[in-house]
Image (cartoon, rainbow, N blue to C red; front, side, top):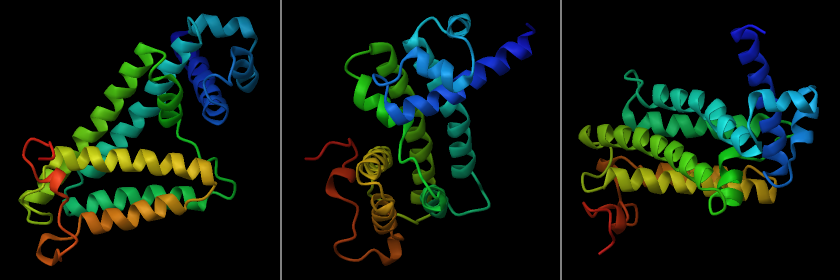
Length: 219
């Protein structure tokens, strides 16, 4: 098998298998379910992956490498004001979920975090790395918005980025539980309020105290 063909087969298994694992969870998905979804013999799985854990690690990279690149591109788009880049990106995500007729309200990284972060150090490490990269990209964009006077000058942008990222992951989990995009819509409404332009920030709309401390620690 050529290198290209091998990569194509591996990508097929990752794509199909990750969908199953997203729906059923890590513990609810066996190698048999993965190979059935990919339409390959069970023995072929081990030509590409040492174990189900190895599959999950490779699936994280397969899914999130392109997503992180899209995130970076969206938040670095110089044609759009920094604050608006953040709002537009999350608005597009909410619209994406809302458009689906039968949305599978699942998040691969959120599901793995919930199930495996305490049980599997290699998976926990990779999850942390991916989330840290996304927070770093968001913090840079928020710092640009701050320099442009679009958000409060006193905000601790890394802490604010961490808060937004955590809130989004929580909204995705709530969406899965209630079977509705309503939690994402609430997230977007509150994000718009949180990132209200500095010049129009009214009492009650200031950056939370825990996000204004330069150390990121609520004093």
